[in-house]
Image 1 (cartoon, rainbow, N blue to C red):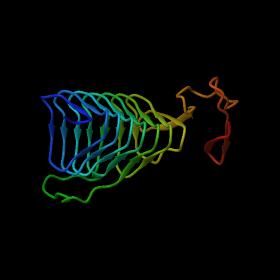
Image 2: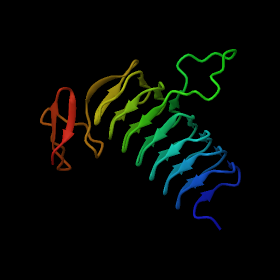
Image 3: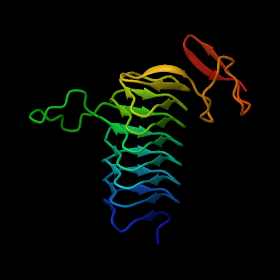
Image 4: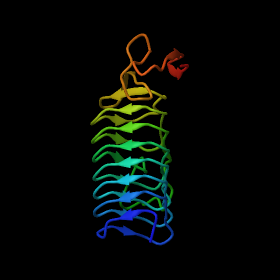
Length: 186
C-alpha cells in the first residue's frame, strides 16, 4: 500500500518519487525522474515530464503539462489548461535533445486558467497570473499580472487579495514598495 492515491487510469513510470497524501486523478502520466512533494493534487489529464520537481501542497488543475525544465515550489496553483513551454525556438527538424530553458515558479504563486508561461523565466513568490495572460519576462514577488504580453497591473497579498494603494491587506499583512519590488513587513 502506498502513501499516495493514483487513479487506475493514470500511469506512473519507474523512478518517480511521490510524497505522502498526493492525489493523482484520471488519465495522468508521471514520467521517469519526476519528484512530487506531499499533499499535491493533480487533476484529470495532467502530464509531469521527466525530471520535473514539484514541491509540497501544489495544485495542478485539469489539462496541464509540466515539461522538463519547469520547477514548481511549494503551494503553487496551476489553473486549468495553463501552459508551460521549455524551448524558445522549437523546430521539429532541429530537436534540442534535452537542452531545455529553466522556468521557476516560486512558493505560493498562482497561474490562472489558460495562462501561458514562456520558458526561461521566474515567477515570484505569491505572484498572481491572470487567466489568459502570456508571461514573457520575469515576474516580481506579489505581482498581479494580466494581458498579452503580461504586464503588472497591481500587487497581491500573500493571501491572494488585491492590494490597494495603502499596500495593507484586510488579512493584516502590510507591504512596502521599493524600486518596483514589493516586500512584506507585517
